[in-house]
Structures are given as C-alpha cells and as structure tokens.
Length: 221
Image 1: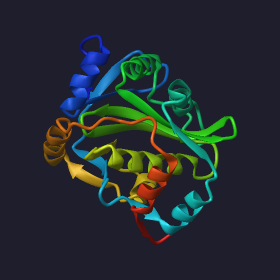
Image 2: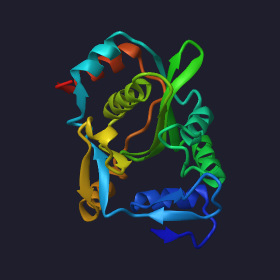
Image 3: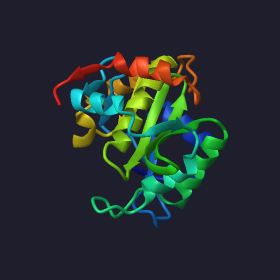
Image 4: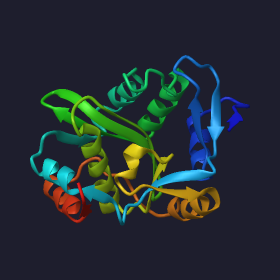
C-alpha cells in the first residue's frame, strides 16, 4: 500500500489498472487515497465459474430484472452506503467522482438487479481490453448481488473477456470458485488480458444471456 503522491485523474486510474494497481480510501470521509498492489489477488474464473444448483434454480425463476449501465451512479452510492455488516466504506467522494468520470468515458460499468422500479442489488467495475476489474457490490434483497454477478460473468464471456479481477478473496466470493493468485502470476495474466480486443456490451438479448448462464458449471448447493 502506498500513499497517493499526486492528484489522481481518470487517465491515471486507467494506467494504474493496466499495471495491477487500484486506489482505495480508508473511510468514506477520508481525504487521502492509497494505491494497492496485493501480494495475493482474487480472480474469478470465467471459464470455470461455479454456479450452485440452488442459485441456478433461483435464476430460472427470474426473481429480478437485470440490466447493465442503467443506474451506475445509484449503484456506486448503494455500494458506499452503510450496512449492518459494514458500517464504513472505502468509497469516498474522490473515488466516487473518479468512477463517475470513468463511466462517462465508457470505461466503468454497472450491473443492476431490480424488483419493479426498485434497485435491490448490483455491482460496478472497470473494463480495459479483455480485463474487468470488479470494485464493489451491494444487495438489498436475497441473492440480488449474486444474480448480478452471474449476469456479469455471462456477459463478459459473451464479449470475449479473459480476466475478472475481484481484488481480494472473500468467503462470499469463494462460493463462485474465486482463486487467490500470486502477484507475479496475476500481472502476467493481466498483461495478456488488457490487450485482448474485447468490448463490454450494455445491451444483449435476454435469451442469449440465459443460454450463456446455462453453460456455467453447476455444483453442490
């Protein structure tokens, strides 16, 4: 972890992501950002993503309407909001502004889960070449963020992405087959992925996405 030494711009953010760095704040009120370069990196496998039978059944019931890039600002605000399990947040005002700028430039994307006209879950991240850097997710209803993640994985696979970076391994992400990758190996994976000519698609047919979800490996509940 290194303290910020200069003003961070969206362009600097993109250069940093390309070499494996990402910024965080210590709290939502913090005025200092830090560059992180973890020794172990959490990576969600796109070719061997684990979809439990329970969640696969749940998705076939279509409990939520899932969209992409329909409510980016709302998603990042929900990710930063206090919750019982995590009252604090690493998303401060500067992080928020930087990601909104990246979204306006077409580099940052969100996935949203909706119940009617109410957003109940989602996630956001940055796409560079064939690499997608997942930043944060939130859930206000059962499985809402999980279903958003499965939709993201299907979307990335269809669009030719090769790397889904989760930053850190967590118990929540482990259920999807997330692996910890040493820094040197991760950076080799990253250097290949960012040069892949992939492009994030906000609009894909529902039947195409559903067919891709059906291709994901299902295992124990």
